[in-house]
Every structure is written in structure tokens, then in C-alpha cells.
Image (cartoon, rainbow, N blue to C red; front, side, top):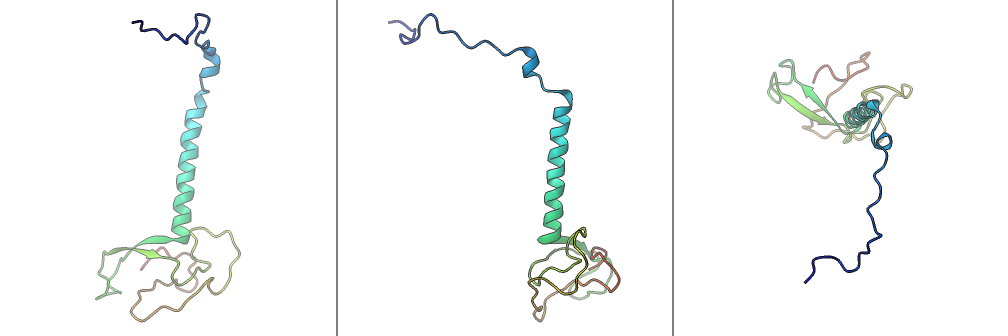
Length: 124
């Protein structure tokens, strides 16, 4: 019994390794990959924050007894449509009304933006 592979021939040799210069990556490429990864994460968070849900903190007792001071909650943005204040940043011109808007049902907790305030992140 022979442990060698009969199909292998003597003139078959493994490919020559690539020169050391071709295998080394530039020093900035690892940093650039990290920066690109962080930018993708930031973009995903901003999109989620703008179109899906947003976290809020209840700083006062104005919502008692339903919500208590210090409560934290995540608010969905899509049940009643999107307005100009829904995105975390404003790239579109100001418009009145809501896209795909619906009327809240009795008992729903709705976060509104005071007139003249362009961002809805300060209170609940």
C-alpha cells in the first residue's frame, strides 16, 4: 500500500506565491474600511430613526397617569404617516400635512411638535 496519490504527477507544483508587495494592503485601507463601516452604521441609524422609530424620554409629569416622569419609550413613526418633522435631518423643502396620514384612535399616545419647533426630539 502506497500513501501517495497516483493521479498526481511529478511536474505538478503548487503555484508560486505572489510577491510580497502584491499581498500587502496599504496602511490606510484598514482605517478606510473601518470608517466606511461606521458611515454605513450611521446611515442605517439615521434612516431607522427617521422612518421607523425614535426613542423618547419623558422629562416631566405632564403625561401622568399614563406615562410617568423618567419613562423611556420608542415611538413608531409610520402608523399616522410622515410629516416634515419626521426625518432626523431635513433635506426636503418644508410642507404642510402628512404623507400616508391617518387619524389617531381614541387612547393612542401621540407625540406632537409645538408650533415653531422644527425637531420633535425634546419632549414626549
